[in-house]
Length: 258
Image (cartoon, rainbow, N blue to C red; front, side, top):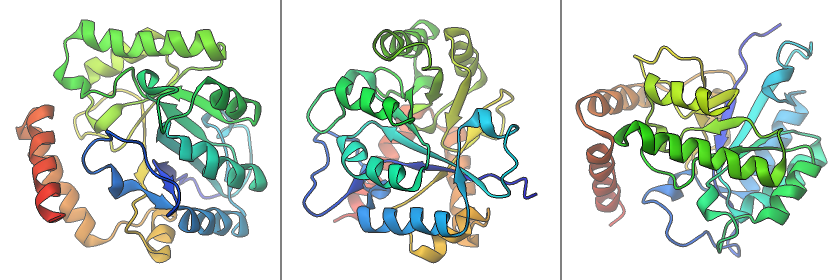
């Protein structure tokens, strides 16, 4: 059995006719996957006999090929575009929502989230307001994580127990607060080198990927140029606090888009 299980991180699933929410963070479009590409990727997984599962099923099922699908931010396009594709293929997935944006223009409301649950999708928290948690005080982190979980549980039931760390900034203190708040599983975008806590790191699926790059991700292969870029990014992150790094990143993205 292949022990490697890819965990994919999606964000927006878009079409030319479907607009994305206003006020998104700079650079969010880097992760906007077109509906055509998403359908192609999911069909490839199905054709190659992958089963999209929940974390709890990893040790229970004997499937030779497993994948875990996650979606961050809770945008309405996930409900409109991603859900029908997943249902058709009988794929399960995690949807992590920014609680403060639930029901706002471009984001799923409680009706959509309930329908997601009824379709066997897993709803989790992506914090209250999507901040850089490592720049907050312990009390502020507790407010972001505990309050978002409490609201989701009140509306959707006790089955809500997963968290996706916003913006990829995490340390062991944040993780300790997360588990103390009641989360069973915590997902991050990419595991920091000095993090000792248990968590699930993911592969960010990007708008620029062709199908060959998607296949490499499924097999755990990262191109050399991306490895170098990631090492540089990690080095810069170590030397800057979250907000300073974020401002630098936003500046570079703005310059490159002109």
